[in-house]
Image (tube, rainbow, N blue to C red; front, side, top):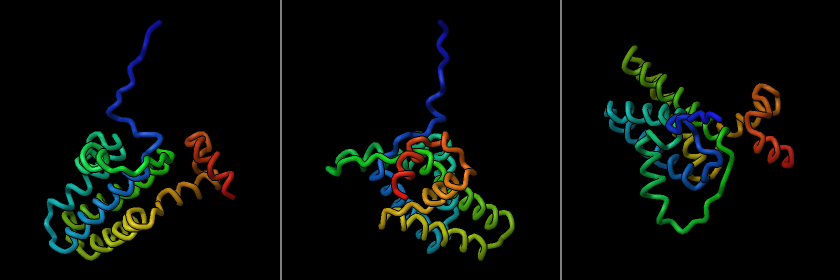
Length: 166
């Protein structure tokens, strides 16, 4: 019998701790708002990198993800709340698209207004996750599953949960 080794670096957690996800979203809000206030380029670069890293590896290669899961989350006495990983990965993908597009708009084309608009949308969505517990990307993922664009096999746990909730 030959065992194949799947690289764990390029995996996304399933399930995801909702508390950690909300803490990461809070970090995104802070970082994006700070960029909007200061226009420090390094903040936009690290924001975009963080989203791409989280899409590809979960918290593994994301400085913010690592900080939350290894430093900030462990001492909190809040019970973990497990939620399916695929919708959270989809939401991270939307964040990656918004931040990379803002990076290209700003640095590549000098379109600061477009970059600002993209980041304001990101701050709004991340704020919903961080402060209200509503994941806009997860909601979109659910709609895509209901319409058949995302196959049910992509997230059987989602299909089971969402089919019960009407």
